[in-house]
Amino acid sequence: MARIFVPLESSPRETRVAVTPETAKKFLSLGMSVLVEKGAGNLAGFSDKAYGEVGAELVDSDNEQSWSDSDVVLCVQEPKKECLEKLKSGTLVVGLLAPYGKESLASSLKSGELSAIALELLPRISRAQSSDALSSQANVAGYKAVLLAASALDRYFPMLMTAAGTVQPAKIVVLGAGVAGLQAIATAKRLGAVVYVSDIRPAVKEQVESLGGRFIDPPEITEKPIESGGYAGQVSSDFLQAQREQLTNHLADADVAICTAQVPGKKAPRLIDDDMLDQMRPGSVIVDLAVDQGGNCSNTKSRETVIRKGVRLIGASDLPCSVPNHASALYARNLLALINPLITNGELILNTDDELINGCLVSQDGVIRYPKVFSLGGDD
Image 1 (cartoon, rainbow, N blue to C red):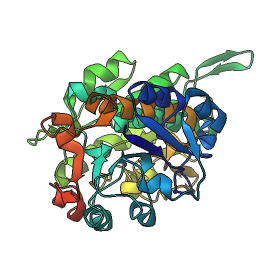
Image 2: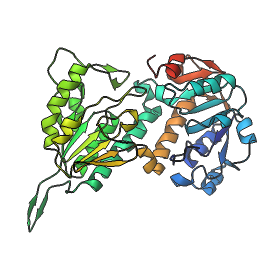
Image 3: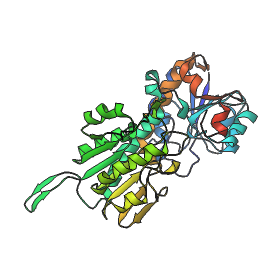
Image 4: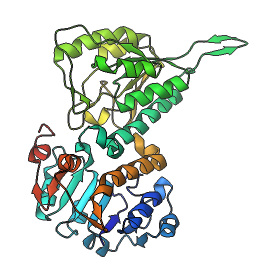
């Protein structure tokens, strides 16, 4: 019987948990044992009692044996180095490990002879959708970004007919029509805003319009933006400059811009520069979801709100952590969907012939399978 360990997340800003009582019950029904560190689910609204009621074993935070006896560690973010050192060889660590450029993580996996699945590397194919943690968390981030903008804006979002006259709806510009961008469109439309959307991929126009957004066609230049692995590919500086010029007029009329353009492991494209910010009216709001990857907008700072000439620039980091209950529920189901096919009679067997596992298994028993991910920032 394989032992799953669910630790209390070590990052001070992390509020999510990798296994909920719902998924713990499922793992137990598959013949595995589940150990949950006391308090692991508290910040996400899942009590120790709830885990105990489904049959999970609760362990104290100072119980080092929980780490050393584990066969599988399910986490949200990378555990601390000293925790990884407690694991026995062959243990599998699964989570959003953010492996890009993390040679220290590769060193810990190698020295401990550990296996690791980095969910960021999950192949973007149809069969992977139920396991796609990046998408589930981006969905939460897109939703919350619009609520932050609505709260910070000095105007209503919807059109209102009042005795004092008509209030015109807010104009929102969403940059990037990936999962976060599409959810931002849907949420802004529900709140009654008029939504314009910019993306380098003409193919997403139909999705944008199906949600009620108005698509801004990409600049007409020779270069044709492509999609790679389910994400918009990087484009030339000439294309980005043409896109900025196109967006300037839209931003000058906008009340809110939601920036979502990013690719895991790569620097976010700079879509809004200082000259474009100068055209925006005082009181308008920008929410930058890409701030931790360099930002789509100049002057944004992680986890800070900067007021520049009256424009509020919100550096929106870790937004899924602000909706921890649902973010955890979705994330836990992603993990269950990925691991379930690997379980036979209570034992977990890694199958690298499986396209999903092969794509995201960065280490197997200490052998680093994708060294460029750790050393070159994901340019493998």
